[in-house]
Image (cartoon, rainbow, N blue to C red; front, side):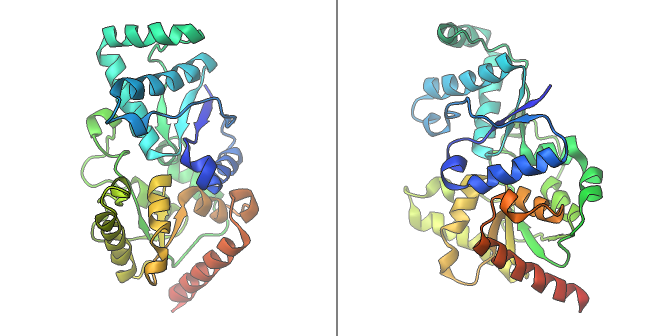
Length: 288
């Protein structure tokens, strides 16, 4: 079974490099992936205001993928959490599933609960695997200290998201180590980035973001690696507040370590120059 890439709403509009890098990396690993858009919003913005519309939005996407005979590979952790919540609700409550399917039937769709939903970081860790990643690395990013931003919606609630790592999560750290980077155990590592509060309590939102970035910087980190557009955009929004780590999505780092051209990874000339300076400094640190 192949995979249908779900980019969500923010990535195509504001972080297209995340999609480009993911597609380039997965093609290099010969993953059967379709990235043509056929989906609607995952429903996340309506989750707390219109639960029925939220559920229907997610269910329609799940049904579309099932009709295509493909599993869903998600780039956004908020979208991932939405799909897992919807799957849990529809699989636990068969009457609710019948009601949703009665609406989906108007489009010739039906949710059967046979599809799999996976986030890109989990896919790279468990489906591609660390050994395969290490074998494809030709330009290890050595000496660079990085803070992994795990995000909230991939980890919590674990019983719904089927997050099965016992104890402290380490899958993102392992992915970063596989390409030569030093992943830091910094303060507030598993805290929220602050994005959900932006526009509601913007002062607190920014404080939460700065605390995480400053904790990474204080441990010598020059990058924060993300796997969620909301986290990435939140970090990017406070970059003018001081000498803070540069946010970058993991598939771009992986692509660079694999020797893929920066332009194929959605990395602009200016971004490439900034990353080159970080990598150069990391190389100097390693040789000392």
